[in-house]
Image (cartoon, rainbow, N blue to C red; front, side):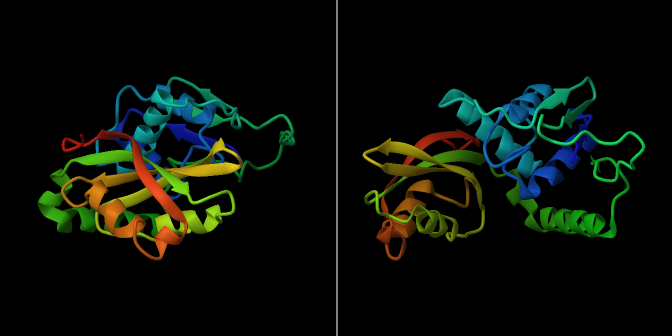
Length: 230
């Protein structure tokens, strides 16, 4: 299935990209890849914080580039002057020329009723939040370490993501080898600085039951973004 992201540096393009990333951590697949780099470099500057999902994704890719980098190949993204399309991988069957291209995802097609309703709900939420939308936001990459190599890392990640509060949005995650068969969880979160304290979150939720059954320690690896970030 081809994915077309057009006019990324326009308001309409950023809005569509924001909706596209609402249910995705990356442009394609389940880890950062060169597809993300292609879209990242196609953006002329960091997106406005009003595009919450694009900001979360952009800050996460920025953090990865500053730390471990991005090496995964991805599906192959071709970036043009006004559009970015995902090309099929080598093992994907080439489309028949006379087939209808119904599998293309055109992010500038006519909005469905569900999309219109979702947009209205987002606009209502922003309006209801009032001055809260002016609060600074930060992207924080956490290192979450298990007790030992027998710790169930799926349960550990569930314990992390089960923490829900106003102003907190969990993003992408991955397991990183530490040594002796032990892996740690690296997970990105976006927070509203005025609503969420990272130190309090760790102390109140990760160092107490039931999360501490799986979590030995949690540290901030990188933090960037909001005006209140340190």
